[in-house]
Image (cartoon, one colour):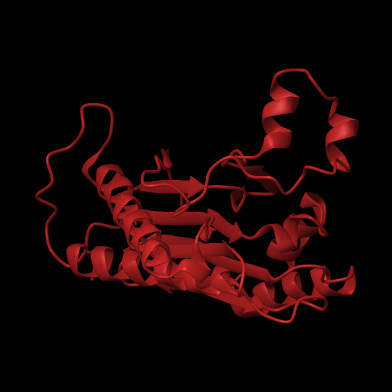
Amino acid sequence: MNTTIAYTVAMAGITDTGRAREHNEDAIAWDESRGLALLADGMGGHNAGDVASRLCIDTLNEILLPTLDKPLRLRPNKHMSRHATLARRAVNKANTAIYENAEANPARKGMGTTLAMVLFYDDKAVVAHVGDSRVYRLRGRELEQITADHSLVRELLEKGVISAEEAEDNPYSHVITKAVGVRPRVVAEVQEFATQPGDVFLLCSDGLTDLVDERDIAEALGAFAGHWQRAAQHLVDLANNHGGRDNISVVIAALGGPR
């Protein structure tokens, strides 16, 4: 158990193939006692996407879960806490595992995965991500996207090449600029946030956010507060009711009162 977490944590999640795909290439995992939530959305030919996402999640669990059971002895980076440093190093190892697996299996060449991770400690949340899987935080009634997509459309939008309206239905909307396992090295974007009792963190794949707007996401999290598995199922149902064009995955991590 990660005894450093300041608040109680309740987690739930679901991954669904959707209504258009034959295979589910997403993978999720969570561990309430250690304050860890993970989500990956794989990509690659010959169904290699599910290999990449599962290998990513499995590698992260193998590294992080035993480490979180004991005091961290990592030397913190001068710009990052020990837990943030741990998260980034774990992603590096997952990247190596996927890349080397693809090198050894030519049919899997180029496979990779997005990643969204939340790791709680003390009264903080470490959020790490690669690609366009997102992390949102609901605080009170305000839902905020706290990760920025590593995508071509976002880069074009930030550079002023396209407008916000053009970004909505852009043909390059699913082109990501960073993924775990595609190249020998990857640098995860790692942030750290102060947490409060009642905060709800949502990890989700683009199968949800492409079809369900943020207002409906916030309403669902509020309506099913305290019933997080039902909330997760409702979000997946919303995406499927809008066509379910992709695999749909969500993990919810809700903070309660002090431990």
